[in-house]
Length: 633
Image (cartoon, rainbow, N blue to C red; front, side, top):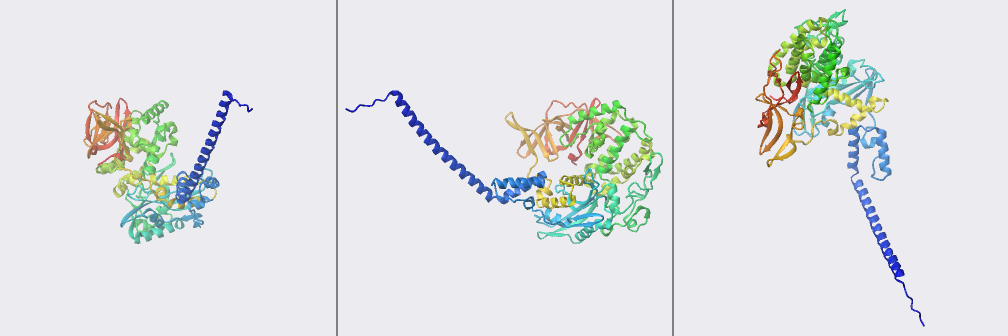
């Protein structure tokens, strides 16, 4: 008799549980296999994608290396890791990735090493997409550049910029490298002169279109200008490049001074004929070019003449005193001025990129800080901290310089010439005749340079100085500096956007930001007129507008309706002249007010804006000064 097996409920549940677990385990394995297959497929797909776009990936990595100045060793390590990981078949070496030339034409010349890049090669790269005949004027710059802090090694590059094309960075034509400046002027300049002479005669052809080339001017500081022209130095008895003034040596101050005003000017013919032999040291190969050896070399570079020259000298005298000037600031005065500068920096508009540091850091100030102090901050800060005669004397300098900084005030240029002469005459009375050094004397010739070349920004070395800084940043080790920098330049020049272009790409102006809906209408609390002028109600410092009707408004918002753009703001009442000597400040669009704008909202068209204003606190009032680069005619 067969016994019937009975299964308890407990065992039955256990068997069902095991069966379910088995099914779950099987399904889990199937899912994991599917996921693994998908991962493998996706990885293969990604690898195939990288392989298909290897040239583009190489280009992207190369652009990243150029933008951030990555060292050769770091790039080689990155390439090795990426190749080892199988990300893509990338080059194994930095030189292959960056297309570094195997050899560079570096020769021994003028007591050092010399690499010539060429004018035509740069122009071919810049105008590679040219589709019409054009004419260009070139500015040139030569200057010494210390390479390392712990070495006497120095670069003497030749740079060039294209006039009226500020969106193109200066070209690097050649670089000389040695332990001091070139010991043979002809060897240093000859390759440059030979090519420039040919280009001035024939121009160049790009894509079947002709580029006519002209020499505009050579912009250098005083020592470099004397060197390349083969003349005596700027502090020599006959050192002036523009006139025949004779300097005198002050035994007390131990410096050369130039007290005469209105001396007869030098001429190109007299220069070439050596009619004043005491002015010359050697004959410059630049004389082979068809240029005016006097007028083509402006002496009014604002960076070295006004900012690092006269303004720096004035602050140094006011801070520390000088022979013949015993009215230096007291310690309490310096503390109060520092407080004013700190407060003014809080209200600095975004167009003034560098804040002015305290007077305690005066010796570390950059050129742009001296520029801001001369053109904007000085008249408000110094009013209560200089004797009246010294302050009025400073106002003469500010007004004359402001006129020369913009074409808007060109009608006042004859006045500026008179004021510069008056400034030099009074300089002797205030600071002593021995203080009329080379920079102060060169104020006699500023207006002549402005008449010939345009405002001071058109003969500035700022763009060239920035390019020199670029050269230093590309050096990664002290060995073979010229070989390093020449290779980096060739690598970078293959990409126009990375090396030559400094413009904002594909940006249309005006731009509107920070939108709101008010009463059913869209408004914007910020408007960018162009890359150098922005109005915003988010920051008080960016909200001050000058209109052509000579009214000042505090910007609130902007509204765009159809083709018209309406700006809304509250007016600033009771505008008055901030000073009346040597002219009424309102003629230079400088006003004072209690700074409290009215509450009534007014509107005007966008094209009625004349300038953006800087508001500074001065005593119990506010002074409003136009930012010169935003000023429109």
